[in-house]
Image 1 (cartoon, helix red, strand yellow):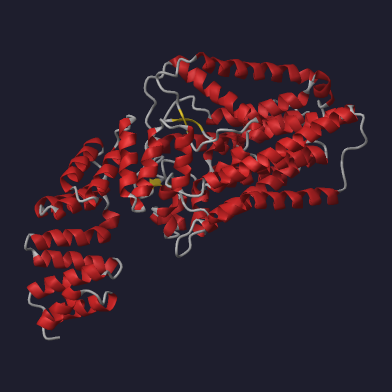
Image 2 (cartoon, rainbow, N blue to C red):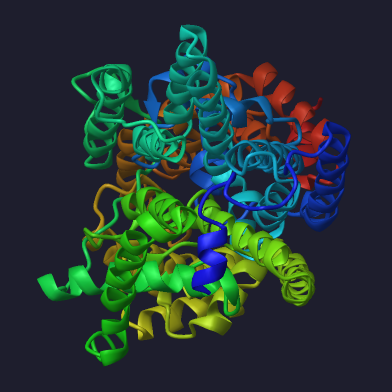
Length: 618
């Protein structure tokens, strides 16, 4: 291995003929990569939205659905600010709403990212086609990248990487030619990358790595001066991110999109030792899954209190320190090793959970850019081995070919994991059967698709595993209501509101349930509270308020509610009939007849409307 590493130290240190190949070969490799990536991800075009961020980003986001581009530019969604990503999602909105254009755009961006990786590593390797081709191939088909492509909500990954990689290429061109235009283009692409995902703030660190790779001293006055705007902007976007994630509006310049904003709670019971060990463990496991990407999941929960003191987690810090030592060793003996590890460190460290929040320790998508450094070390080492010994090189490249075939097969299977909500969370439950939120998400999906008994079983399992949040109680309440057990439904809605008293939809659901129980006054109070908390949904909530007022004998108030619903919302036959009944009570027989006729046009089988018209002699 030391001989291989020394041979891979610099792009120009081998005794082989000039490495730069004719450009037609590069274009041929690029065409092959495009075909393979599209083939591997093609089945994702038939996938649906999944109930994990897709609702907040697209399905229930009025700004995206309404293509309100101006509002999106200064709005935070799900406590994150990435306006360019949301604008690109709004472009994909069609009627009827479908996930297909969103996923097609993700695949297209991943294809472009793969080509940019090919170009960048072609430059980094001094024009070695085998090195650039293998790095781009691994980037394009690695199973750990499926989450960034097949999931609608990870548009931010493929979009920010596009501008990030293009910015690095522009900076490389600047280092070659020292023309200010290239540096200005680099800055523009850096800003676009930050507006797509704010983790792009690590860009100046990678610029320093490119300086060192080319033999330029980044601490020289000119090099430092060039990076000042990049560092200032990186600091600005970092401050925006920190402020928005705590619910802030960055001094009134931003706003939060309508809808519920998820708050990631801190992880309880974490000692300072755990805070240091567990991120290092994740750092190590990402490296393991680069080589053996098995047991992949949409979620990797923190270890339970019974598991957290397992001695195996001490391997994480050992590996982290070991890679630092290896990078230091490579400074004189194998520069490519130092460069690759430094790339991995610079791009991975910002996404490790040094401050533990939420319930997830790792995410596959966090490897999207960090793996490039390790891929580059692997590909350069293989090429160096081939140049030293044809026989050894043949064996190693053949083994790599078998490994790549296995990766393609795993990626194809992993793409299907993201088919829909049911498939996604069923897979997660198979890998992590004691992760309660997976049962919650699957239960919500099952409730929406009419699988009431299965949904209730999932909610009860989540509750049994210790998840006692508003979503679980609301899900149980909805299930009980569907089964006609209204008293039990109200109990569950009460528990949900005890946990989260600002959740408008729970008041709405409890109001409907109370109305069904004949408690019109309690139902009216709940609906009014729901309208206060969700003023943007007043048109959708008004019919139920009207029904409650009708039960209480307030026909005029009910009529106003039905008028509002029909003016601002769809023409619904049930609301039309209810308004006709109100008009009849108020003596407006002509208006009532008009509503009953409209009801019959939309629903010819409505015998009540027909009977009312006959009674009116109409």
